[in-house]
Length: 221
Ligand code: AMP
Image 1: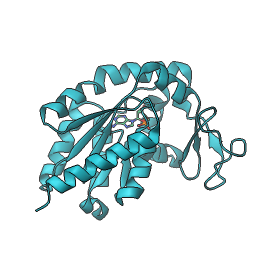
Image 2: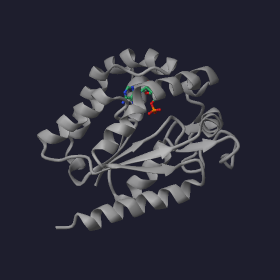
Image 3: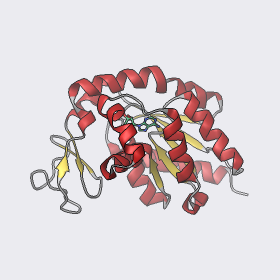
């Protein structure tokens, strides 16, 4: 199963992708996580990406496509993957199609997590992320048991630098301008399923798992 999770920042792509990856036993590929790792390790890529990320702008297609190409060359993606945060525009989608085509594979399912603006802002402005395991918490919706400490691994929780109010607005603008056209792109290829992601995350998760199962059942050889 090769699945893409699409949707605005705050739709829950990362949260859903982490759980789906465990449940479906597939690697989770998040270009945002890969870029943040590069920034924290101070690599050449991280140095080039950092300012764009802090401003809420997209990192250049060239850098991100190259980074993804390296990731999809790893043997663990043979059984499939859950892609989150990529593609962010049509150019990236076409590059992905090309990378997969070279390997005689293609995207199976694209899940669009449709989320309203008030929910996005509420989720992002209260989001806390574990600096060790990457788990997400929320100051109001899902507070950790101990202040600023991850329930899972005890790591320190932090607010992402791009989850500040001004940067959230910029990220939403970028989403509408660059990423929203992807919905039409995948719809035209009959790969898109739209789910409302404003509500309970477990309901959304179960629906995605059902869709994956339906897909697998209808494509059994
Ligand atoms: P995310 O964790 O997916 O919200 O991504 C955080 C930030 O990383 C974005 O605001 C962009 O600056 C950068 N980023 C992540 N994925 C991409 C991508 N596919 N193309 C360009 N920039 C990206």
